[in-house]
Length: 482
Image (tube, rainbow, N blue to C red):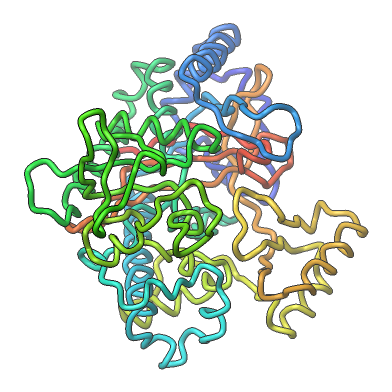
């Protein structure tokens, strides 16, 4: 293989698993074709590809919102042109682990909203469940179609220094980012049209088709053409681009709360020809804002009475309401126990070791070792409200301790995991940057399907471990080889 200036200067980060380079400084086999292809391209060619990608993202309106930057709302989602590559055997392992985990989490949701055997048997403490703000008593004994609560999930995976996969968190409420996975692939097809078939990259484009098929199957009315809608909070939501993309790809109506009305415990959509009954709602509105009669009375985003229609079984809602109790970071620590309890199996994918600050001994240990820890709010997301101990000043650490002591149950701590690195094209050279992976799983009446790929998020700042787009991260296309 011809050597290239891009790779001469590439130096893997010490003590970090590099997706492209093995320990012997040899390029891993599954990256070889991509490296050979890129080696033949001039820096000018690659710069043009990078510029084209930016233009395509801009023309497609592929943006996200940074709420705390103070520099305008919409930003282009940064995209790195070098794909992240996963072998068939690695993917088979990940897929099996996610299916096992979701099966157990779904059984957990069914259990705690019905018989609560896992609490009675002392596997999960009752106070962890009842103190969770996302445990909704309104879901008690409510029968959901096919007993499926988690129709759509995004499971965040990272790799440690030895290449072991860990689950960082489970996103089981309204997981976002799938449109970026789909658009990343479309843009890669434009940039490297010959390379995808040469490498035998598996397709991710079936995602909307599988989702649509699952939504159809949930219709409470046994009719040929049930009405499916995607309920969005509206144009000011950070994921609005995704809502429009998915509605368009599935061929379903994109609606807001004001477009729907409940009459006689049935949900109707307002149309130019009158009211049309709605059978299935793929909602991207959080539980709190879904029904002002039951949850937040000031909400303008939801539909008054929708919870009554749901309870009567006249409409299916995806994902189920009340799922947040299963992705609370304090409950996360018990997922391996759930797998053993419900499935009588050992967990395939490991959890990151996690300490609960509601436990006095664990809190004391964490306070003594703050500089080695990542501390998060149990119900936080998007990287907000997080402390990266190794990068924090003494004053920031002291301030954070005061915040924790106000309500320790709301915080967990994890050791700083190194996160694997992958090559990124930065200023005309290849440089390692830290990454994670969010595969998307769809749970329907026929079982769990995971499109081969997912969203690889990249910490674009040198040395950073934070991959969230809201904190300056970007993404790259994820190739799973056949």
